[in-house]
Amino acid sequence: MSLQQIIDSAVNVEISRSKLVAQTISRSGRISTASRNWANPFRFTVTPQPVWTASEYRSVFAELLDGDRNTTMGFYLNNISQSTFQATLGNSWMINYQGNNDSNNNNTLDSYSATSDTAGSKIVLTNTNSTSITAGTYIVKKGDYMRLVGTRYPYISTADVIIPTAATGITGTITAAGVRVAQDSSFNSTTFLTTTTRTAITGLSSTTNLSVGQIISETGSNTGSFGGITYIEAIVSSTQINIVSTTACTAGSITFAGTGNTSTPCVCVPIHRGYLGTVSTNTEVRVGARAAQFVVNVSNLPQIRYLPGQLVELTGDIELIEEIL
Image 1 (cartoon, rainbow, N blue to C red):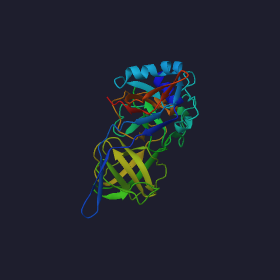
Image 2 (cartoon, rainbow, N blue to C red):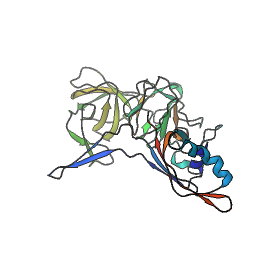
Image 3 (cartoon, helix red, strand yellow):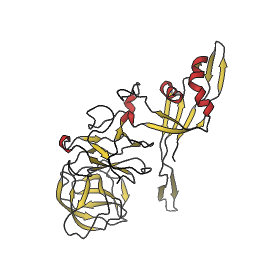
Image 4 (cartoon, rainbow, N blue to C red):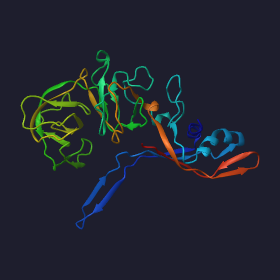
């Protein structure tokens, strides 16, 4: 528990989860960017409580110092009660679950579990109790922590995802790869270059009953086609949605349907990094404080200064990096 105690009593904890991004500038002034850091580990800089009594220092820091930089350790970003599974510290506001699918208040999704289709930058959820779920209810909100039971890596949702309403008979045109399209409805000046697996559907007459994270499937005879599991990444306007597929889509006209609150699987939750590892069907999903659990290696330890009065001062920060196997 020593690292957890240090985190709990720290003066501050800095978190970095920025991607490894490279930029190049052409002679004409065009800037190109690329990122290949799929694992995207969390990095922490912990400023510990600076002065400890000798007894506190021995009980709290002995394990950390003995393990040095050779031993992996685990901690919750905000310590939780083992009886209520709720965060117990004043900074719990950072990681509180914001969705509405946790009526038992134990930081576990009530009506959804993860499926074995989870892969790429998404977690696929299927409903486990279709009689008690209401369309329009938030499963997660942007920024919610998620972690599948039995796995070691937490993820952060990158979009608000609701329980969807079934949609049928939607028609539009899948955009071919290599076209620059609007990325979302909030910043229409922000665009991305379409690929065969991340593209747009334009020419919609309406986006009624469509929602972010909703899984869509083609119906009827079409020129265009979806590739594997396809979900809505963003609703840009009443005439355009952006989609992500597991395999290549074919450009052209298409008629499609969207999953509803009793569909299996039901939704895809976009996450901040590619999913690491594999998962079995019907795996419970932790959210909020119970999900924000990390396994880390120590990359830097503070210096120690012994003071009169049986006091110990730590003269630097502790740096941690998430261990990715």
